[in-house]
Length: 240
Image (cartoon, one colour):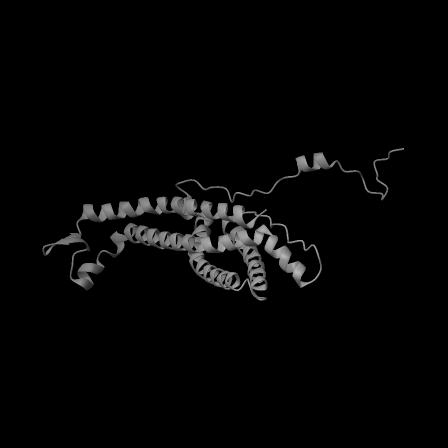
């Protein structure tokens, strides 16, 4: 008689219904804030921090991976080339785990880890062969190389846009510094044949402030686009 329990005494579970009813964690990141709220949300500043960190991470990752891969490929005919390549790819998998954790903390991205290499025979040679055949390590190496151009673009964009936006939006508060300390009426817009034009009148100061306010709301959208590109890289190269 079926009493609803299996042979071990546990209740039966309909796996299909359980999978259908179980909530699935989002993989695409945190909910998007509205345009007007974007400069004031924590997600925007986490994406800014991610963009700033991309440069030092990219420099270190690119330098290490390119150096080690070049050395390993250059010595592949000797007994040290393949172990160096395998160790480099294993390091790329470890770096990929760090990057998935960083993307989870700062970009709200849930990226499952790829499958581990499965050696077909025991010993060091089995591990080397499995690591070299595993695609996740090579994708991690490609990710490490791509992090340098992404880091340069994201760091430069974040610093430039936020500095211009904040300085322009607050220009009415510090415009007085120019006549007081630099003996000029305001920001010098251009100088043509010893004829300089300064942003010093009330309409000009208001225009600079208005430009800064516009950039304060546009900058988060630009950084979100770069963050989406980074999310796609993590999903495509570091996840299964």
